[in-house]
Each structure stands twice: as structure tokens, then as C-alpha cells.
Length: 236
Ligand code: G3P
Ligand code: CA
Image (tube, rainbow, N blue to C red):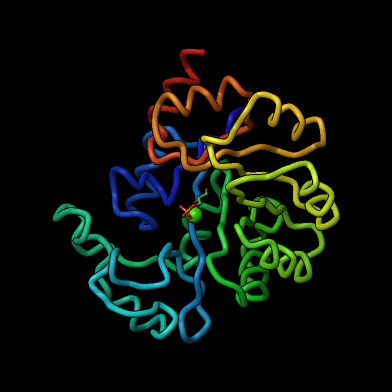
């Protein structure tokens, strides 16, 4: 089954990386959730895309300068619309508690280094090591996760890739390549699959690009509009 992964939750319809957005994504037909990982000043892994709090909360400055107790006071929904006033930032622990036992894909993206040990510890606590895929644009982050755990699923997010890249990915047991959707080609997907990689496209800007990726044979996509991907899949 094609992975229909709600990007930061249903981030076009609800404030990204909040519980509201994740539940909305599943309601809209996603069979997976994508989110971003950062760490608070006191070592709690928090779901947040930006380094700064300014865009998506009523806080200011770096997330990493605040304790989890302080971060929990922030409003992470009112910037999006009045309907979501009172939404809170979400810890990875709460996310895993809410969604870890559902039959869905979970893609966790490292937005910074240094949280690998805590990540593995948290996943082990929830018995989810075998279920999640840890992704990053930064290959060094993936190497650090591999050092922290020998078999956890890894995915590399890339804007461009070439054949030379693949040997290194294999060396570190990266099983998923995540190309930017507008670089996806039939030949590229064929080669990656032949080499044993899963292919998950990201930055799927519109319906046309989504259909293009499906035609090229990707295994899945991270999308802001899981309902549209769901409809396209059902009409196939
Ligand atoms: O799924 C990949 C995607 O999340 C990467 O981009 O900036 O949304 O984290 P970004
Ligand atoms: Ca992300």
C-alpha cells in the first residue's frame, strides 16, 4: 500500500505538529504521520519544525533555550486560526503514546543533532524501535542514529541524489531515500527500487506533482493534503 504520510500532520488544515493536525491527518485518510524533532533545554524531545518559536507559537527565540515546563505554557494554535487557540506543543513521548499503537507509518525527522540517545531511549520505552523511520537531510545525523542503534529504519531526505550516493547509504543501512518530488523520475525510482531502497517523495506541491510521483512508482509521499492522495489512490 502506498504510504500517504501527513506532513507535520494535516498542515494545510490545522496548525502543524499539534495533536489537532495529526488527528486531522488521519481523519483525512493518511496512513502515516510525519513530524520534526528538536530538544528542549532540559532534554525533552519536542515536535517542532523551526529552530525559533516565533512563527508557530506565541513564544519567541530558540526552542532549545526553554525548559519543557516553559514550552508547555505556549499557545501553538492561535497563529493558525481562532479555532485552534489553546493547542500546545507536543512532546515526542506524547506523540508516541497517542499514535504509536495505531497501524500507521511514523516518520520522525531530526531537525538537530545531539538527541539521538534520548530518541532511541524514548522509542525503546514505547517498544517502537521497529516501527518508526528516522529521517534527516543531514547524513551525519543519520550516522549518529545508526551508532546509537544498529538496525533502526533510516531515511535520507535529499534535494538531489546520484548513483554515487547509494553505496554510502547502503553502508549505513539507510533503507529509504526521500527525493524532492519535482526531481522524481521514472528511471530514478526504478533504479532506487532495483537497488532495494524504498522511495518516499516530499514537497509534493500540488495534485499534478502527486500524480507524477504515483506514475513514477514511488512507495509513498509526505503530503499536506492526504485527502487528495487518498482520492487519487482510490480512483486507481
Ligand atoms: O518529509 C520531508 C519533509 O518534512 C522535509 O521538509 O522542511 O518540511 O521538514 P520540512
Ligand atoms: Ca519534516
